Amino acid sequence: MPAEVTIDGRSLSIADVVAVARHEATVAISSPALREVGRCREVVEAALAGGATMYGVTTGFGKLAHVRIPSERIRQLQLNLIRSHASGVGEPLATEAVRAMMLLRANVLVRGTSGVRPRLPELLVAMLNARVHPRVPSQGSVGASGDLAPLAHLALALVGEGDDGAALRTAGLQPIELEAKEGLAFVNGTQAQAGLAALLVHDAWVLWRTAHAAAAMSLEAVRGTPEPFDARIHAARPHPFQEQSAALLRELLADSEIRESHREHDPRVQDAYSLRCTPQILGAVGEGLAFAERLVAVELNAATDNPLVFGEDIVSGGNFHGQPLALALDVLGIGLATLAGLAERRIERIVNPDLSSGLPAFLAREPGLESGFMTPQIAAAALAAECRVLATPASVQSLPTEGNQEDVVPMGMSAAWKAGRIFANAVRVVAIELLAGAQGLEFLKPLKPGRGVARAHGVVRRDVPPLAGDRPLTGDIERVAAGIRAGEFDPEGGGA
Image (cartoon, rainbow, N blue to C red; front, side, top):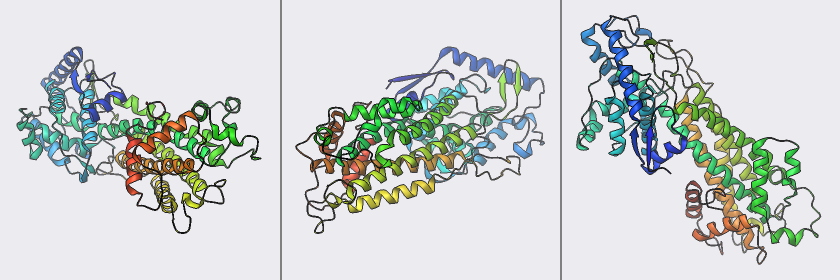
């Protein structure tokens, strides 16, 4: 992760967002970009001096765009916009989400199309570097004119109002007095949902790779066959992530003593779909994640406010509409719900004595006296079912707002919340699968699993001992889930 990220409005990456949001990398602004911000501001000021009518600058907002604002009240208009739109509700966004939003908002402002003074992005960057993180409610945005409410709450701190304004001064930073267009330029944008989406895309790929380690461990535990992962099969249906998924499974299962021990004695030639079709299913999930990543990566460096400045022209449009992100987040959620459902089905095969190829019932040492992994499988089923409920798309749930001026809205923040909840559920389902798979391997010793599976088993056992008798398993599940989120099981991240 980079220790410093320089923003210019055009080159920010998802890795940069993660570095600033989670690892508190410092932020700097490119000097050429800052000069372009100043030039763009001159265009706005010249237009105002010439008496131009400019939406949201010399007019009201939305359905009130017909109301003309006198020049002496232009500053008040911008401040009123921030105050009135700071009407979010619900639990506050996590600090990492707020930092991501701040970074993305600063990056958009330095692109040179917003028409603000350089001082506005400079203050945002100073707040990031001083660890000043405003409280931003998580609900109340439909994502149509951008994330109006979340960004307005962020802007309140910049103008020095409320508790966050006091925190600004405590950090030795001076609040800003908004000039013409600056309030509108700040709140028109998709940076709340984009910040959440960037973090989720990063995390989803870690989970996607980790799910392969869990799948490979499950296959070993029930003594399944790796033959369906033969490269020739997947070359015959060459979806890129299906091929990548099969290759990852082959690597994880390489040099398995368990497989060699039953190759000649096990008559099975085909396993159930949850084992045999893992590359086809996780490959499709990977395609969905790649789609979401592509849309999010574009949005990180997109001009999403309104109106925009191009050369000497000031043009009104609708780049603030969050439909691309809402769709990306819905696809992300659907993919992760699929991943969780697949993992839950493999857990069932490990714990069910009718399906587990000789493992003791529910992986208990003394089935009947002990229940073993009976209830963790129930927990996985509950989580997978909730994922399916949450996978209902938000991006088609348009409900008109603002006097029907915003008559088609994307519900991007709702999509982000759902995707985040699905991700958290899916992490815990995969954690349960890793625990069940590791317990299953205990009964196959001294045979050793494939190299990659052995590494994953070692990571599990570093924090969680084998189940020698019934004990509460919540702590074990949460410890492994934390390890998944930290990338400890990621085959490509130094883990399994």
